[in-house]
Amino acid sequence: MTPVNKADKLSPDASEKGDLSMPAKVDMDKIVSLCKRRGLIFPSSEIYGGLASCWDYGPMGVELKRNVRDAWWKTIVHERADVVGLDTSIMMHPGVWAASGHIDSFTDPLVECKSCHLRWRATEMKGERCPKCGGELTEPRMFNLMFKTSMGPVEEEASTVYLRPETAQGIFVNFDNVITTTRKKLPLGIAQIGKSFRNEITTGNFIFRTREFEHMELEYFVKPGTDEEWLDYWVRERFDWYVKLGIRKENLRLRQHGKDELAHYARDCYDIEYLFPMGWSELEGIANRGDFDLIQHAKHSGRELGYYDAEAGEKYVPYVIEPSAGVDRSVLACLIDAYDEEEVEGEKRTVLHLHRSLAPIKVAVLPLSRNEKLTPLAKEVFNRLCPNFVTDYDDSQSIGRRYRRQDEIGTPFCVTIDFESLEDKQVTIRERDSLAQIRVPVEGVGKILEAKLKGEAFDASALWATRQK
Ligand code: GAP
Image (tube, rainbow, N blue to C red):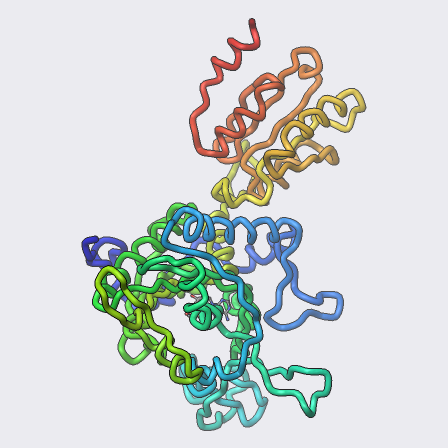
């Protein structure tokens, strides 16, 4: 493994700090409105007026979010022999958070307006006055971001527990369990996807910063001394993952944390930033956590948390490289990057050019009309496709409107059944991006779509030849 100069290879402007003046192609309101209109994301508890910073994923959003999670899990866990998965509880022994430093150090400086009592993150303040009403601000005080609750049926007797602010600690406290039961050798990664909770002082920008969100975290345990090379490796891997998901490279960049902004556990850290509508902002952090966590948990729990390297005949406490991403933030970046407004035959169409692996619906079966003669063949096509792909069946409204709906949720392929189909048993496949239409035999439509959804070229002549026999 050769260390890379990350700044040279991955991002031409990696040395720049967050540049909020950079224009982006789509404003957030358009994304929020599309998400509401097409059942991707709704405000939480909307019929009660909503709950600040909480969002619900609708029928299309739940598929998109699941696809993002699955893409991460496939790359990080299933396609590697050196990573295993884990699913740990959200509430953990309070000692975990004392050991990890979250009780003492997981804080943000908060200032409050003396007149309207709004609270702000001190680090985000540009002037000395309240941005809302211009009132005088209090001195900054530290505010812990962990949500507290109590465990047990009687509140007075209950002990305080915290909702986890990161999934990472569930991995560290299970390090020994995993090593013992899998008998894997280092370097070894342990991966987890799950909800995390942070009582953020300021939230906003839709699902960018919320108080409840989902983490995708990998803790990659390595021999001390190899950690810097592994940090390079994971920065590169993670950057490439977003590109493979279809995010444009020019909308991604890398930024190394300054010494003054490193988290209490980190020796080094890089952010992968995305050009969100509000400017370049963090999409994922990749940190070198050293041996901080295992040493702390060993000290606080009294259990030894080391590794015996049988080949080298030595014992050590591994260092940890941690790529830590947000599911919701990745969903948002994918939506923004895929969003487009185009003019097609004099009409505006809004389209999500989502990568086919992320599209909530892969294929929509659309009979030209609801005419009862078309229904049996259309249903037959649907039944052929739905065991293999997430397939929608829609026969309401005009065909034009139905195409528009599918374009707006990013469906890569529509299959149309018309009156000619009844005669020649052929249907039309319409591609979302090129708008190309091809006519194919009903019995081949599944094979063609399978190849197309895998990104493979498909030689239709073989199909026609089989048919003619
Ligand atoms: N275990 C390390 C850790 O949690 P982080 O930089 O605080 O590091 C990692 O978070 C990622 O989690 C961020 O890059 C972001 O994608 C996501 N994230 C963090 N806080 C978030 C929030 N309040 N809302 C949505 N996503 C968040």
